[in-house]
Length: 386
Image 1 (cartoon, helix red, strand yellow):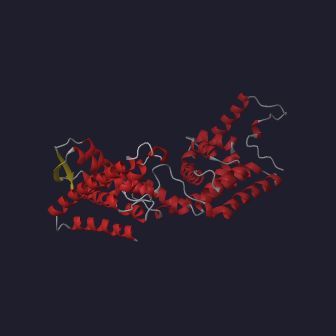
Image 2: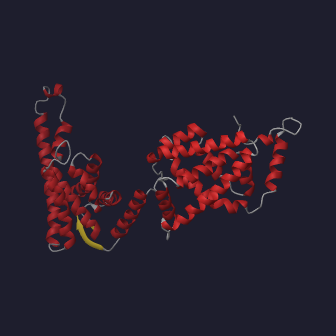
């Protein structure tokens, strides 16, 4: 079997003696000095495209394709990082001389990624990274990589195998086996994105920015809340997020469709409420008023309807605070006391939320956004009786 030891030529002298480290380094310096200075700048776009393609492929290292590549070739992120660390022609020359086979694998796998079902999300990611371009605009980059990677693979193959027929066949089989992994397991591929850069996360970030800009608009209303009202309304703003996280009922799951219930906007307003001073005017932009209005509707519904698997808020308070059975005999009135407390809390929440809702509807009886905001929660409320 042919041995693709990348740096064989740096191991021995013509007489068979092992080269010293200084001699190896001198040979490398001689080789890299012969390279055209523009080699790195010429190949840099190819290396960058290949690195992005490999990161998208290898992010889920235990997935079938990355796992199979590691088993067959010993290929992983360390190879990609080594290529990514190259910064000039000298470094590229050293990489190609010392790690030729790994570089061959890198270019082949980069090509296969662009020929796989990762092609579209990869081009879309590149487009989002370059404002003003689209995925279709990057078809040219894809074609560039496919053309020049093929030429580079041919050159690397000739360098690795030379006139050795056995080595040439081994390299051909290596390439076929790598291509077979993509052919057999291509349906399992899924794009990996750096944290915060997936399409969903980028869209969410854009929506959060839009919310923040809208919330910083001119003050629409100034209201005075006492301490209990402030804390209760800030809790109401957090409730939809809690229910969405639990996702135990159709109603809770559907809250995610309410645009004003995006997490950052809800938290921002809740924190403002909690940190505000009682009996001092609290200023709300129009978007914040509508957000608080819809949150109050959800909170009022939650006080009496089964919004979670545990029931209503009153049920949750009741069950969550019941003492263990062996304590009941020592404190016979505990269950009744807790039930009374839960009922009073539910009545207080209902009254407070209803009062705030009434204030909004009384002051804006014909406003289309208020009417639609109410209708949106009312449609979700229908899920509570299905």
